[in-house]
Image 1 (tube, rainbow, N blue to C red):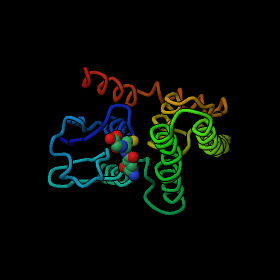
Image 2 (image 1 turned 120 degrees about the horizontal axis):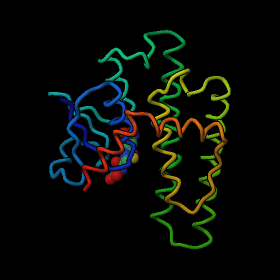
Image 3 (image 1 turned 180 degrees about the vertical axis):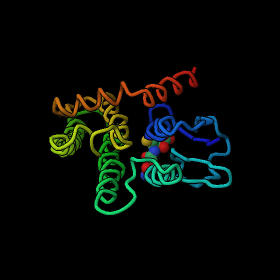
Length: 201
Ligand SMILES: N[C@@H](CCC(=O)N[C@@H](CS)C(=O)NCC(=O)O)C(=O)O
């Protein structure tokens, strides 16, 4: 069984949902209750996946590892389709996630006031522009990677939930909102949220 070190509602939630999608058992370990978490040298960050003697850090690496290992259709075997999938995976992991990360950084490091609000607004403008890129893709296919929900959609749904923590207006088109609602109703995603809720009780 896989072991997943996570924080409730963090980016690790997408890995958790993917494990459900792959119908894999997972032992969930809340990072804040893992006294020896530092041994993973993940800079204190989740997700960390343990598969027997393998320790895998970094969300995108974990996703590629799991999709390859379980030969899942979400990861095209080769060619431009595979490149396109990895492009969107990196858009989520290396572009949109850090853009939301700036909100967390500004929220915790600046004193409340005009300067902070101005900085938060600038960061949220960048995020809105990235959601516009998602909207353009959804003009081509109902989900980011094609006709069916893929892990990238799940990652986007996790990040989208973080906007509510901040006094900012992040613009998303109705098409983007519709895609996110579909992910939130997707059984593997629903189960991940419910399992994390139960684990924190
Ligand atoms: N590049 C890393 C970023 C991971 C990351 O930023 N994780 C956040 C949660 S979303 C984290 O663990 N922050 C520290 C904490 O929550 O204590 C990855 O994709 O795995």
